Image 1: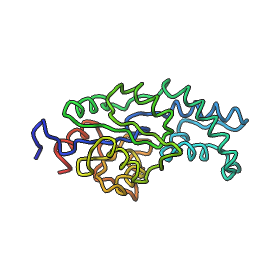
Image 2: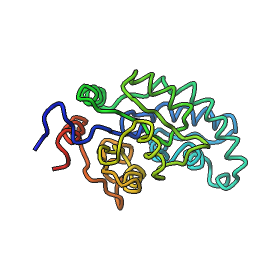
Image 3: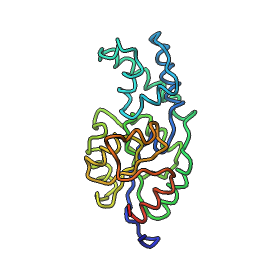
Length: 228
């Protein structure tokens, strides 16, 4: 049974970025292919780039490179640094919000929830993109950097909760892949999986979240009423 409108079961909702609240495939593909042009390497299609995402920029680059280059860490470093600069230029051009996400976030905020972004995307682009697409809806924004571990390390969640002043019992993690489900599991908090992500429901195989939703407004219902 739902609590009253002024009291949420979960008042802190942490979101993944790519594939969860924002479809970033077009901009990532443009940046990847501009990078590959610098090194005279083959392009990737949007469908291929979509399959490369969810494990951070370094893994994205490794997957985009021809196999013969993937074990050369020095070369990967060079390609990654070029990609980071191109993506900074591209990251607000063609990415789009998923259906209902903006309304979902607005309603959660209106009910008093604190919202956070915890993503493996490099922090430099994360800090550009989230305010550009979502204004001030998010209270915490953290991408990947050398100082922080990548998901599914639970420290990412612990850092967010420390900053927001929230406890694990107040918190849900929302994401589109097994990485997010494992992040939540490692942090000992519930996870909502979204079916519209880059890999669909198949992205959770072997790492199931507590619930998978098909529409963004279901996230509001769970935050208010719990998983019953």
